[in-house]
Image (cartoon, rainbow, N blue to C red; front, top):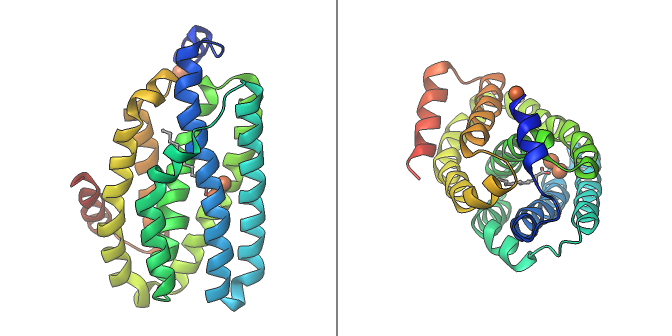
Length: 230
Ligand code: Y39
Ligand code: FE
Ligand code: FE
Ligand code: FE
């Protein structure tokens, strides 16, 4: 019921809403575009999974187009310069991992951290989205669970070999997500998305993923605490 109250109170046509949307929509478009690039590049490191990864990349490209349509539908111009800066650190870390041939860090950054961020953001957005964007986002979030699952399966299959590297990469990248969340807290609130709900949804998805990969409860707690050091 809370969602209903929030969504009826939102004025999708107001300048305040559109201004916040110009940044959040841009972040999502940029994120989808980078996700497409990340899976395409990851395919070059993993010939055995190249076909699957190329399929994921195609899905990300479709997501990007869907969210571009959401902005157009509200007559909003996405602030892509803001969005590029927003993703710069994760982008840099992914590119570094790629250059190092560090598949584990690549998976952690894209398939665990970024996918969980997307899942949290889209789940929290759906109940407060305009009807056009809601339909698009409902379709997209289903795909994001598949992407997260792909990373989980790969990492689980190599768990003993990748465990230490995952711990390090988590420590390096999880704090960045919290900083990113803090950065758009006010814009998200204008769209009816609460920061605490976002954090909760992220942590549920992220800890479930870590558990599926093979970490125990204490390890997951320790990894989560590193995120709080933001
Ligand atoms: O795998 C994917 O499709 C991920 C790229 C997309 C990330 C989207 C990030 C959304 C953050 C929105 C922040 C709202 C508070
Ligand atoms: Fe409710
Ligand atoms: Fe996506
Ligand atoms: Fe994805």
